[in-house]
Length: 447
Image 1 (cartoon, helix red, strand yellow):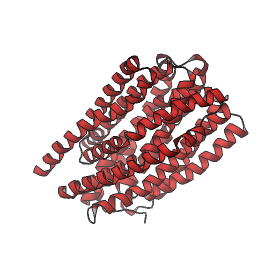
Image 2 (cartoon, one colour):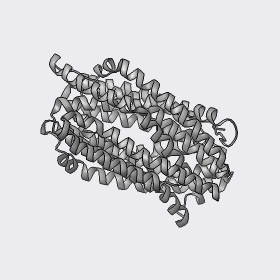
Image 3 (cartoon, helix red, strand yellow):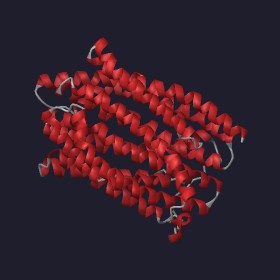
Image 4 (cartoon, one colour):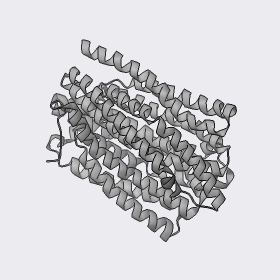
């Protein structure tokens, strides 16, 4: 039988950290192959290829964010059913989630291919990197069904308390991706398209790995009747998943506005901005893991009616998250220049200019990292309690803060003003989320 874990008993801090740790390591491996993609492209293909990758970043993240939002939302209901011991309802929610994911991935694939070129044009992508950016997006969007399948499989496993299987899947995927990056880009000379293809093949392998382990879970022995789009259940799943998907989409649109401003500062600035953005995932890796842990922990305890444990878990998670963010920030400030240098190539002058831009951005984000970690923990607890609308409101706040800062601050203090757009977005979201948490937990306590 595959691993499952009840999070309704035991010390909250220990449960949260031990559940998050394998997710964290898995996310490190996921970020590893993203970072290797960037290193191989930046070093082997040069500054222009690195800039092309950066110009496509937010559009790629938009689709990934929509997929993650939907599947995380579906996982909330699964965690609640598992925590309450309702096996039949758990299987039905999994079956409906599979069908909804199939329909959604088909729609997103068509949408992505249709909007790729027009959006890159609207974002003022420089002509000399346009075709490479478009090629990267075309290939990544073809893999949307694979990405959806992996994220749904991982969401099912996490909702049942299994954080280790997604870890092992990511280790395998990272190894495959790195090997294929070197083979496709350096060996076969396939360029930026080879890097995209390597990522998708790695995702497919991680998806197969997770699916194999789901089939071993006795609790999820599915029958044909479980794969049925019941109106009430489907609407409930969409009510949980759609706001999270919209939240991620609106955040990414704000990121596109930032990218459009960055694109106006030239290829060197784009390359420096991209190098640090590729480390964003490393900065955020533990925060994302604590978030997944808190959705599962909160959902299971809500299903079991243990509201007091949710409060205890929230306090424990915040302390752990703040300590982790401080440690990561110190590491980035001390070793950031060396890491960033691994992404950058070109003439000595290009290298130095790009590195200065990248490190300044990295320092700004590192100093403010605790805000991002508070955001992830608080948002995930609210989502775990079944409220995805208030977190969506925080995503809208992120959008406005990010977009307004990106548009106006560079006019006041120069191009370095763009680096504060992310910080202002985090801050705006946290204000809404902290207030929302107290409202939602109070309402749950009354029921």
